Length: 340
Image (cartoon, rainbow, N blue to C red):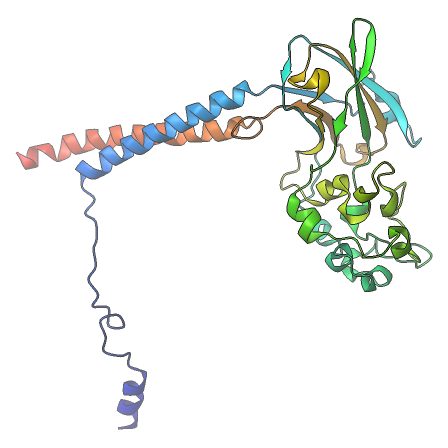
């Protein structure tokens, strides 16, 4: 009796839903549906793939390696030097207009920003402007939470400490005259980063918020002096800092450094002529066999150059068409006689 009462108590209600009596529909996948479906999906994917591939190929891109491993590289002396702010220059020539808008990237290879411990090495409360975490950084920042004198590091952690610190200027030479190309660094980070995720302390002047703290070990300047030309671009909302803090998913990546200011002679992009990139070489990559690059590129409706996406669509579309042909042959060979 007790067993029957227990079973009754656990029994679901006698409804169509709990007793699985709801009307159900199950498609019957016949050859007349599957084969045309595969053909249509394949053709659609091939069409999208062609559009993506052609668009990607139309994007203009210039890429230059300035690591300095080769003795012929203009930055070879800097790569072997331990002097800070080593100067080198890279020259290139444009024979035609590089259509705007033009974006200026720096690239790193063999650099694993996706490493778990590296990605966790930061203090989100500190980066949100909470002053209590300035004097007591999170233990997740270790060993970059305190310096040798036991003073707290702000911003703490491996990501901030390894911030990219090479700098670049661009000049254009035409008819024997050298002109500085204006580089725009505003708005290069994600809007959510400098409006939501990262905040400066509500302290004026900002320098006072960092009293009793020290800058990251590998930084030349404290956070409140990152941009001497624009006081609003300092601290945790500095655009270059925010770009670096958004980690890359793959070991070979590029990050936006600047946009070419689309005004004056550069309204339509970079005109034909001789260009020089003056590089302040600081960032070390030889220890992990890394490579440093600079990239000039424009964009399309699909973004930057990405031939893989178009090729992937073409491959999947082609496989669908091939599979539809195979299924049609099999169906014709084994099914048509039975139907007759």
